[in-house]
Length: 193
Image (cartoon, rainbow, N blue to C red; front, side, top):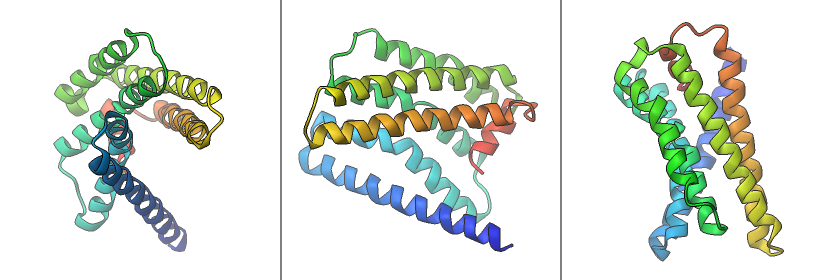
């Protein structure tokens, strides 16, 4: 249908723009080789991988389930990378990043092991941890932005808003699918559609 083609075009345009931003961030890291630039690349990496896999799926028709699972695990690690970045631009209690890594690992490692047979509550836990950690990262980035009046402050406001919106999107996706999903694998598959 024409609506389907339009959505494919929008998806392709979004993926192309995201790819351009990722490449620009990677080039900046390559030129500078500093920790802040590396953290920016890490923040963009999960979504870039997911979007690249969607393009691959459109071209090739399918993605190996293990690759899909690893991509979802990487996507669910996004708040950890964002918190790491936030810790570079403002002081942060030392326990937050290890707690976020543990919060990611507790549901995600069993999801990787169990795959489609994982109980739905396990994915729900992963979504909750994602939203909480992503929200905390947004708050920390906004606090850092509030303390700066330069272009860097504006970039941090944009990063804080984008982080909050990404967390809200994952929450909405999880909530929208919670009544229809019978297995965690169903929602994982829907994330890559």
